[in-house]
Image 1 (cartoon, rainbow, N blue to C red):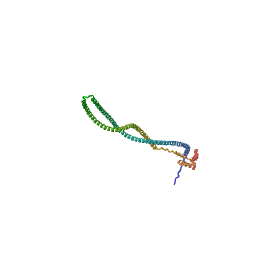
Image 2 (cartoon, rainbow, N blue to C red; image 1 turned 90 degrees about the horizontal axis):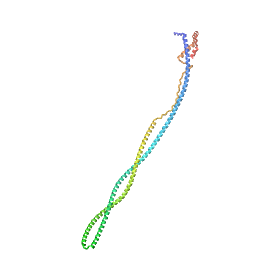
Image 3 (cartoon, rainbow, N blue to C red; image 1 turned 135 degrees about the horizontal axis):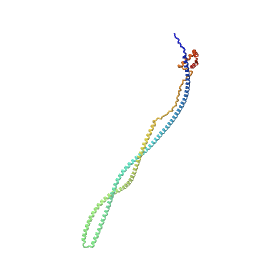
Image 4 (cartoon, helix red, strand yellow; image 1 turned 135 degrees about the vertical axis):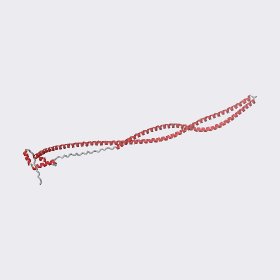
Length: 386
């Protein structure tokens, strides 16, 4: 057998519950109004926030566009500058190569000239050797000239000797004639001592004749010897004179050669001085060219390093940033609609209480209100349910 649960009616508790429910209803209505106001404020703030976001997005898009345009301009300008620099470097390298090639050609021509000059110098050296040899020969010719002069002097002395011998012979003949004349005079003037004088004279004459014969013999022998020697010497001298005459022509030629060699020596000295000057100038030019080449090499190394740096520097390509508009996730405010019923425990409890009041129609409550004089309308509970 099941026992029935008997629930007694407690009037005070009912009143307390009604009062609490009424206060809860008022608070709920107030909170609902406040929530509606808050929802409106949130909507207005969301609209303002969306407008500001749009403005910010537009500003950011404009700034990014301006920055991208500026960076694109800078990139184009830098690329143009780099292209200009590369073109200038290419032009300068071409000029440098042309200059170096021109200078190399000039140096090759100068080297060829130096080779020719070295050949000329060798020829000049051989000619100088020849000149030295000719100098020695000219010294020998001078010695021969001195010998010729001595021979000429000897020839002159031989001529004087011949003249003297002829004079002696003429003097002797004159003396003999005078003696003959004297003999005739003595024969005519002196008669006594003719024989004695004749004998004396004959003896004297014989002596003189002997002496003359001896002197003539000696003179003849000496003259023959002298003639032979002189003829021999004259032949030798004639041969030597012929040789010397040929050598005189040689001396003339040698003098002419001397003069020409002197002129050539002067010219050669001038040429050597000019060659020295040219060589010094070429050495100075070579030094200056070496300095220019070193400077150009330094410039080329610098340009190459700059080019390597420029090649190594990868151009920073700034991609145009697409302005991605962030979808503003609007907070879904769950507005408590009047149609949708909340299935919370408070709402269930209130529904339970209101349903009980409607179903039972609460006769005891009406009676309680009448006795106490406190009025409590059931409409308020219905509004709470709604």
